[in-house]
Image (cartoon, rainbow, N blue to C red; front, side, top):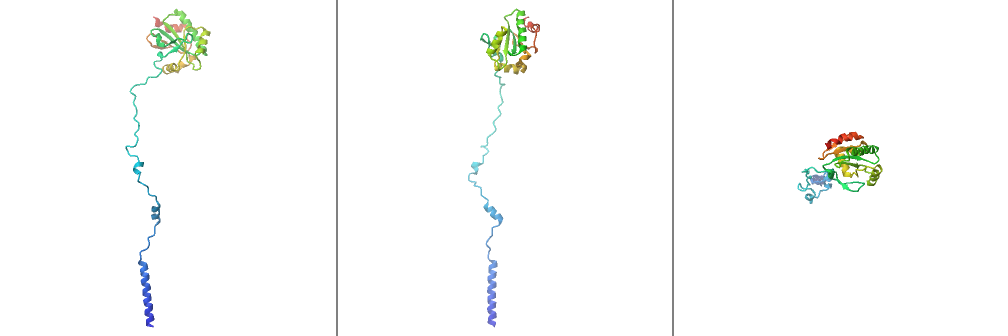
Length: 222
């Protein structure tokens, strides 16, 4: 009986030793969710990182602001030197060709009734002054829809005998920029006097009688 008890004790001790060994054995590490996430995160390839990132010297600098050294001259200046064509004779001329003379310049259009009336006063003015050689009248058609043929027929119909020309675009632009856009509005009867020295006197808008025109022009002949 004692032998049986000893045998059981020995078996129990062996079992306890086995259990003790299992509890102290190092456990296989288990990956946490954080470790798994880190493991699955793709690692950036930094092999060519220097080539991809622009260096300070590669960054383009803003273009330097150019400071003009001189004021640009408009292409229509001086407009008095721009070539005009007399629609009746076909001859070309410029305003400055008549430097030293008194010039009466008007802007007009063939459809403008005020222009016809004003030009009748201009014709009478020439007669009253005795048609002096140093007094030049010039009528510029500023209507973009009218050409030399239309203006030539107009002059022939009314029998005017001074310079009539279609205003070149640059001349019209000069008149509008220098002397206001009213010079491109024919019914206002815009007119100016260019004196012997090239100075300009602007006459009042509206139809001017021959007496008024004479009062404006006469001082330049004294």
